[in-house]
Length: 217
Image (tube, rainbow, N blue to C red; front, top):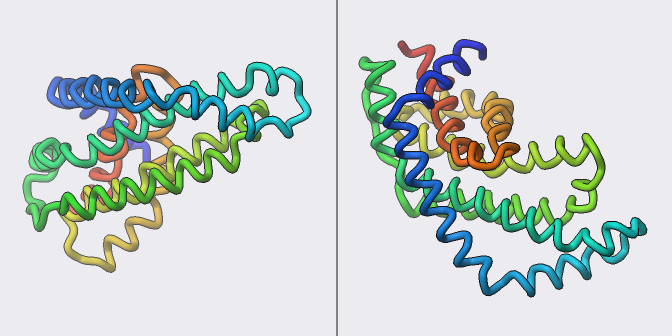
């Protein structure tokens, strides 16, 4: 685990990765602003109604606005994850060739499947977010819950994106997948820091890359 994280940090600090992440981040910010611009009032109204049963006064007065900001932030994270999933193939191949030159590219992620898995993970993420929203206002517990939710958003799409490129052994891929939950949570830690959060999806991909291919070197 330590070696995987060390290699991944070294990779994410390379100029190619940084430039890729910045492109995805800017595009995601533009798309998120466009999506939330006309939906801010409906979102705020819905969250205000949803949180009205919580007995804490501060939640009823300012909770909806805070929750709406959190929702917009979550939408931004989803958008970054989606774009990273769709456009990171060349970057992953380049990193694999650098570290594991003997490992061949055995396939390619299908855009439709990648999009479907990301949207599925996003829907599950948003549903769980809405259901657990009151817990987010509880210190410590809220941070643990949201970290888990972020890992749900990253895990399945990332396993597919990396696995479809380098692993044609379904049994081995299934075995590797069992140990990716913790890696997804490690990558999700980036989401706690604005601006740095745009690195989370590609960091997850790099972590998964080293996890899946490390033993093949």
